[in-house]
Length: 342
Image (cartoon, rainbow, N blue to C red; front, side, top):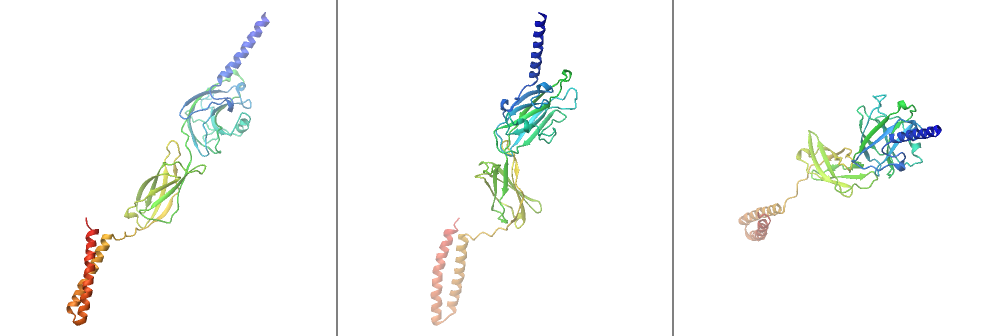
């Protein structure tokens, strides 16, 4: 009977040991296929430990997987996360975090073992001394639907007196997509001309319509002007209305889009362009009619004066010419009244 009781007690202790080890791991999945999918803006919690028997990589690391929404090349992923320090070493924060793509249950270990030690610059990130981190990661790989956050600790302790658990929590911030923008090169631009920018996504496709852009123009002696435009078919047109102080000078043009919660901020390289002096506008129809009437009036007066002084056939010839010019002058003055009426 004692043997049976001892056996039952031994089994109970064994089960308890497994249960306590399993309970030390909370949140996330122990492999990519078990990883829960996380949403932007949601708060998540988990717990890792340093028990060797609970390690799921190489008998010395414990890793938790969280599946990210689909990502594209050059997206910026922001994670706000927290953890607690080690009890034995209060200045150390054992939990590390990294982003990986294109893994599955069979190859994640080979990718994981290539990571360097945790630091603030990644790709394996550490917490600061405050136990919090605002980590921004730029996606380097091509578009994939298998992207994961991995939280991990060293799990190599075998002495129960050294066992510790490390709770952590995190929030996934908005995923900002990449934008590329450039100003189309020109050598000269009219003060009332148009400057055009191109805007594209990381895959080369045109940026969505309706994205707001700003254009800043500067020139010598502290001159500055700003304009706005929106994307349409991957281009942004800025209608200029530069002041006279910019005429004939070299202007520096920079277009930009601020980060908006969906797309990253972007600023074009500077473009230096000669700002032309505007051409004088052509005379109006009214002015042309007035000038024509003035010319005919002077011609009529001159012919009339010459006819008064002439004699014989020459006098008759000049008089006939004066009458013809007078008829044209009457028509011209009628046009002036019609075109210049206010």
